[in-house]
Image (tube, rainbow, N blue to C red; front, side):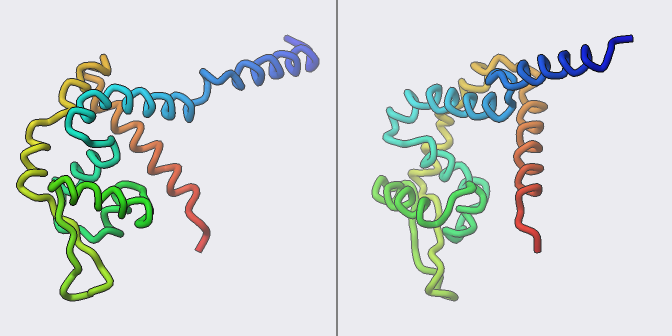
Length: 159
């Protein structure tokens, strides 16, 4: 049986190993996000879109006629960050923004036909295969979403 000194030394070595950047799940997810951005960039550059503009359009394709704040919640973006993105998409003819007639304080966003056609071309379709996950793709996507959701729950302010 190892002495407590040996166990403590072993624990310290383990702690040092744990502090390697490659052992941080948060860094793996962060760097994977950067890699996705790089992978999407050539296809989106041809369309004149950023990744954030693209995912905003994808979110609207799931549920159209959202308020800016509701769209921001889906994308984890504040309205003041999302508004310039939507203005650019509107200038490109992909979305329409208009005041909600029932509540003039709210702005509603809808995809235009041009925006829908762009998404039907599925500019990111090749990236599923590029991940190399094969049949594990859905499982990994669900696991990452679960990590995100659990962290959001854990960091909500106490009410």
